Amino acid sequence: MASDLHGTVTTLPGPGDRAGQTTPTVVVRGLSKSFGTHRVLDNLDLEIAPGEFVALIGRSGSGKSTLLRALAGLDPDVTGQTEVTGTVAIAFQEPRLVPWKRVRANVALGLRTPDASTVAIAALREVGLADKARAWPLTLSGGEAQRASLARALVREPRLLLLDEPFSALDALTRITTHRLVLRLWEHHQPAVLLVTHDVDEALELADRVVVLTDGRISHSADIRAPRPRDRASSSLTTLRTRLLAELGVDTEGIS
Image 1: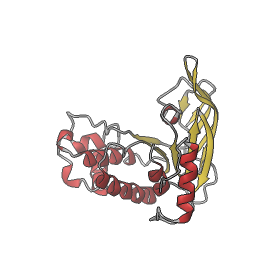
Image 2: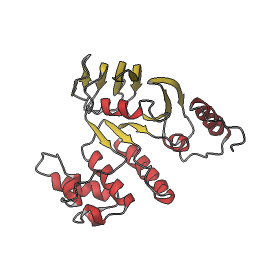
Image 3: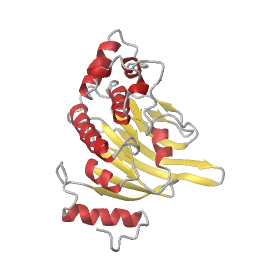
């Protein structure tokens, strides 16, 4: 995708083979957005490499969801340059399943291929919901609905997967299993991922890089080179956690 200086998003063709790709999947230059006199994004620059998993954290109102919506082409009222190579898919905090369509039809929603139903079943099988294909969305648990939402996003084989706090409404145990599922799906499909989250530990567990957004600008960026699965108690992650919390204005004295 590419945007002109008025934020209009169009699609750029993606390369057929990701192997050896050096062109960033996401290039953002000078992105700005205001609500009245309040500037939510302030001349922001960002690049995301092919297959890179980036977590975006920041206080409420720092511009996280606004940036995500701009990358998804859902907010044309931005200025600056935004380029995304290939298809974009998004999973929101709420699964946003259409209640009058069965789960399989929800996953296939928007697909225009003759094998859309077959592709949707394969995606549901991948997230462990093949037996729910003919179920109604309202009969799903919260975790199942979120998995259906992930299947709907991944069925399009996106080059960029946007995740807008998709785990925040899940209970602790479901969140753990969904984290593992997302990592498995990411490793299999290899999209670039931008995860918006308020949870520093979640960012440290999942991402290759954590970016802190403060007042519409990137105030800190940290690579995470620890192998997965990660030990949150390791000295390197503990040090990074303290730094990230400090960037968010959290007093870490006495916090272990």
